[in-house]
Length: 236
Image 1: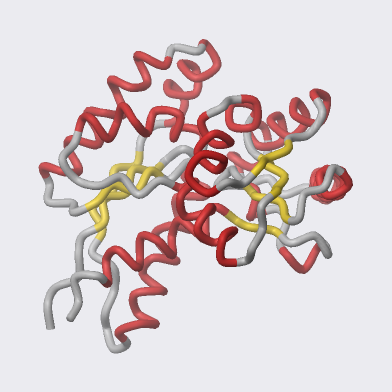
Image 2 (image 1 turned 120 degrees about the vertical axis):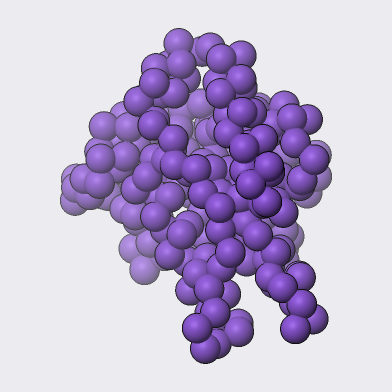
């Protein structure tokens, strides 16, 4: 049997969701191959605090420099692909791809492929303010998959973002915040969204499909499945 391909995992943004990547990647590989098989992973877990300060300051050039260096380290260590375990930092996906010679598995592509399979062409997008208000995620879904995205109103963008950084990134799962998120999900559905993309790797810690009748697409899980498929592509 040919070897599994090695996943280069750049995590820590935040570590609360990065642990899901590590756990689920190993679980999926084991489900496919059985026995004592697990996922070959080379992981860098960054200190998120200084990066978050750069994010708030809008210093994308400094973020690019730091993340590019980490991506190059993963490649040099033997990774066959790059998995950026965060939605927001995919704003730098094009720049990071230029810094390495291995494929970057884009999280929005994994979401778009699942949406296409489900014949969904209009979605609500939940995530950080950077993801919801930025163009990088919505444009990729539109240009590559012909999927339209709608986002919450400004007040809900602010509150959604605050819950992510002040609660979910610290492992705090509050019932009031869950109720608020579910209200925002229904508001997006009322705008014509056929499904809502959980476009932040922490949101799935708070709300799941069982909580709402509106279809949810958890970007974390679509990304993990894409990475597992890549790793298994080396197995004959």
